[in-house]
Image (cartoon, rainbow, N blue to C red):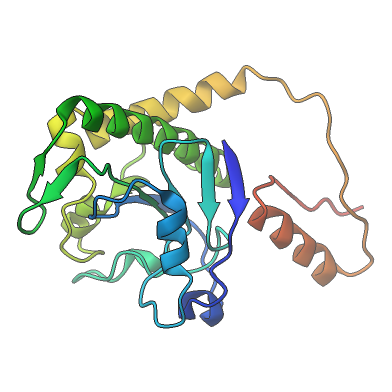
Length: 229
C-alpha cells in the first residue's frame, strides 16, 4: 500500500478544518463507472465541492489521502440519530468501467469477468487500508458499529439513504460480514511482524509543539505517539 498525500486544499470541507476522534470506519463505493482513483481525488479538490472523504482507492497500490485521518469529512450525510461524519474515517472505492447504471443503485454488467476481477481487487485494497486504519487507531473491526458501509450507516440512523457498498459487492458474493473478518485476519497477520526499531522524530519543551508534530506524522500515515520524559 502506497499512501499518496493529495490533500484536497480547495475543498470547503478541508478548509473548515474540524477535527474528530475516530470511532470507526465507513466505506463507500462511488456510484459511477470510473476506475481511476486519481480522477475521483481530483474531483474532490474543487472549491464548489459539497462532499469529501478521507481517501480514495482503486485496484492499484495507491491510496490517495485527501484529508488528515482525524479531520471531519463530509461523506455520509445524516439520519435521525445524527451524522457519522463526526466519528467515522471514510474512504471511497472506485467502480469498473464495465458497468452501466440504469436507475438508482441498479446497474447492468457489460463484462462480468472483468467486473468481478476489478471488484475483487478493490476489495483486497479496502481490506488492506481498513486494517491499517484499525491498527492506527486501536479499533476492533469485528466490534459492533466499528467497520460499516454507507448502507449500514443509514440503517443505524447516522447516514443518508445510500446502497453502497453492498449494491456492488452482493453480485460477487461479497459481504460486510466477511469484510470485517478479512480485516481482522489481515491485522492478525501483521502482528507476526515484530517491531525491531523505533525512530524518534523530535524532542520538545512545549507539549503543544509535540502534539503538532504528532498530528503531522499521523496525517502522513505514520503511527506516532508522545512520551513525557
